[in-house]
Image 1 (cartoon, helix red, strand yellow):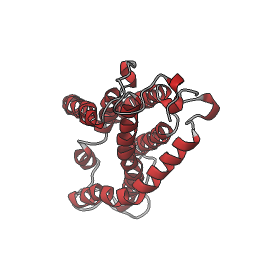
Image 2 (cartoon, helix red, strand yellow; image 1 turned 120 degrees about the vertical axis):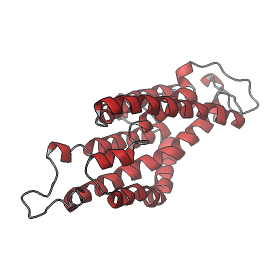
Image 3 (cartoon, helix red, strand yellow; image 1 turned 45 degrees about the horizontal axis):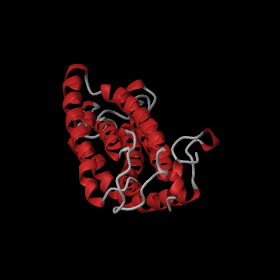
Image 4 (cartoon, helix red, strand yellow; image 1 turned 45 degrees about the vertical axis):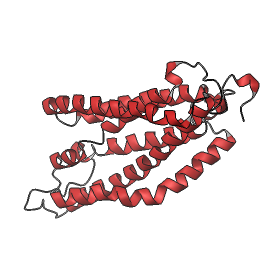
Length: 243
């Protein structure tokens, strides 16, 4: 519950509370969707550039639907537990608390998995050389490289799928704290769509000039900003006031 000393509204009937702009869900959605763009819109082209066949890419893209069924509910339960117990991402050092802590953790794992796509390019994963494995006649990646991508893609999918519902749950909670109605949810989330459109347009131009490897850099930058935003977002929420 929200105490009178928290300075935050507790229901849709309350008078809206003035808060810094960065504590609004719209700012978090803007950064979140910019981060999603780095590993979202151009995924199939990204894999095609790395020698995967159409069939291999289809299987990798389909892994998302299966993985989402396995992790969304457990991760949501973990986020609720973290919220009730006031878990902090960095313990006594601070950082995001509760839902934000679990969301930040999932985003970091997702970003690390995306970065792991680069290992075959750096020669750190099997490429079929030296083990009697030849590149497929159609130019697709070797079976061992494809297996590596499949494992990483599955881990990436499991971590990223858990972030969607947590973002929406945090937004509804924050709107309640700000004394805003649930009808404001669409207006806040709209900023994510704006960010998605702008970022993908920009990434398309940059990637066309420098290649899709720029997504690695953009992914690292945006996930860093996202974790920082989650920390600020958490500190201006009722549950993070004492952290």
